[in-house]
Image 1 (cartoon, rainbow, N blue to C red):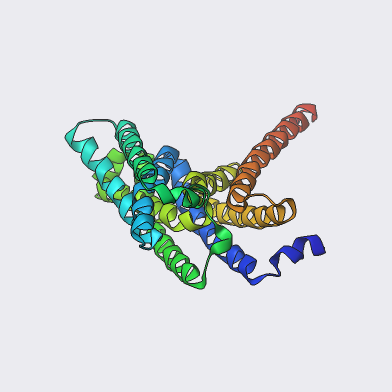
Image 2 (cartoon, one colour; image 1 turned 90 degrees about the vertical axis):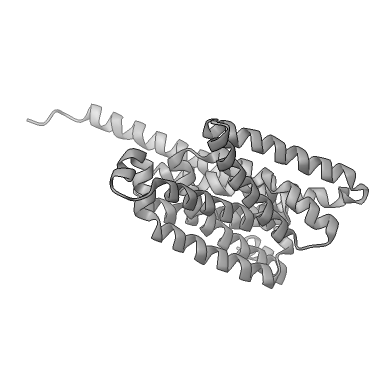
Length: 284
C-alpha cells in the first residue's frame, strides 16, 4: 500500500489534501443546488468571470483571492441588473456577462507582457501551493457555505419546486435566489486556489451529478457529493503524483470520471433489477 500513502508524506501534499477536502465539501453543498436547479452554466460563468479580477490583482501585486472575489461579486450583481433592466432571460444575461468578463480578462492578460508565466496557475490552479493561510480561508468559507445552506434550506426547496408557491408561502424567492447565487459564488471563489478558473466547475458539478444517481434527498445528496469530491481529490493527488500530471486537472478529471462511473453503475443496477423482476415468476 506504499503507492497509496507515499504521495502524502510531504507536508505540502498534506496541505493540498486538506485544502482539497475543504473545497470538496463546499462544492458538494453548493453543487447539489447547482445540479438540482440546472445552474451549471452560472457556475462556469462565475469561474470565468473571476479572470479580470485575478488578472488585475496579479498585475498590481494584490492577493488574487481578493481580486477573484470582487470580480465574481461584480459579475453576480451584473447578471441581475442586466436581467432586470434589459429584460433578458437569465441564461442570456449570464452569457452576455460571461463573454464580456472573459474578454476583459484576456485583454488585461495580453496587455501585461510579463503575465504569461502566471496564466497556467490562473486557468488550472495550483493546489500543491496551498498555504496554512489558504486553509484558514477555506475553512471559514465552508462554515459560511454550510450555514447558508442550512438557513436558506426551506426557501431554496420552495424555489426549486415552484417560484409562485414560494412567493405564496412568504418565503421571498428573490432572496432565496440571491442566497443561492451567493453560495455558488462563494464556492467558486474559494475553489479557485485549488483547481483554477477553468476546472472549478468539475468539482462543483461532477460529484453532485454522481450523488444524484443514488438519492433524491437533498441533505443526503450533499453529504454523498462531498464524500465523492473528497475521494476525487485523493485519487487525483495519487494519480498526479505517480503519473507526473497537472494536479488540478487530474483532480477535476477524477471527479468527472466518478460521475461517469456512477451513472454507468446506476444504469447497470437498474438493468439487472428489471431483468430480475422480468424473470421472476408472477406472484399468485
